[in-house]
Length: 273
Image (cartoon, rainbow, N blue to C red):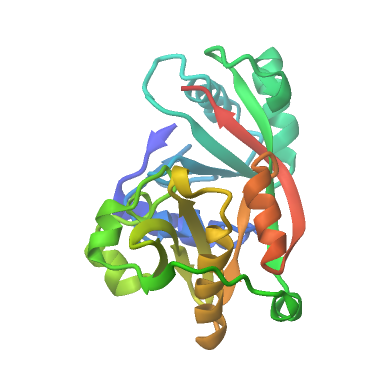
C-alpha cells in the first residue's frame, strides 16, 4: 500500500467513475473537496485503490486479485501495526471483493451481532443506499410542533452543533461549508436541537447529513429539519441522497418516513482500531 500524493489524485478520477453505487464521500476526497487519503498498489499505474474520508468512511475498489496489496491491506485493516487510532467504515466495489476479504480476514471477520468489541476484529455490517421518491415525499404529512424555529445553519451553529455527525466533520472549514454547502437547523425554545446539512455535494446530488443533540432526540425534530433541506433540494432541482447502516434503525426508519426507499444493500466493514 502506497500513500498517494495529492497532486496524483487525478489518477483515481476515471476508475472511480466505474463504481456504480453511491460514492459521493469518495468523490469528495478524490476531487479534493475535502482533505483525505488515497492508498494505491502502484503510483505510476495504479490498479487497486483505497480512499479514506477524514470522517472515517472508506472505499476499497479496483483489482481484487492483488496479492501484495491485499496482504498489506490485511495488516492495515486489523491495525496490526497500530497506525490508526479510530475505526474506519469500509465499502467495497465490485462484489468480488467480498469473497476476497472473507478469505483474507478469516476468523477475524465477525458479524456485528456477534462482535464482542475485542481488538483485531473486522465487524461485518450492512450499508443501505436509498432512492428518493418525490411522489411519496409529497404525500407525507409534515409534522408541526410548537416552540420551534427553522433557521439556516450559520457560522455560529457550525461551530456549536453537538454530536458525532455534524457539519464540521464533513467540511475542511466553516468558510467552505458556508460558501459551497447548505444546512438548516431547528431551534427548540431558542436552543439548538437538530441540524440537517450537505454532507457531500456533486453535480445535482446532495447527500444529507443529520444530527440531533442527545437530549432532544425522539421528539420528531430530525424529521422536521430534514424536510426543510429536502424542500430546498426540490426547489433547486437537486437530488437528495440518503445512505446509512442497516443496523442504524433510527436513520433507516427516518429515511423511509421522508420518502426514501432502499434500493441496494451491501456489506459494510468496520475495521479494527
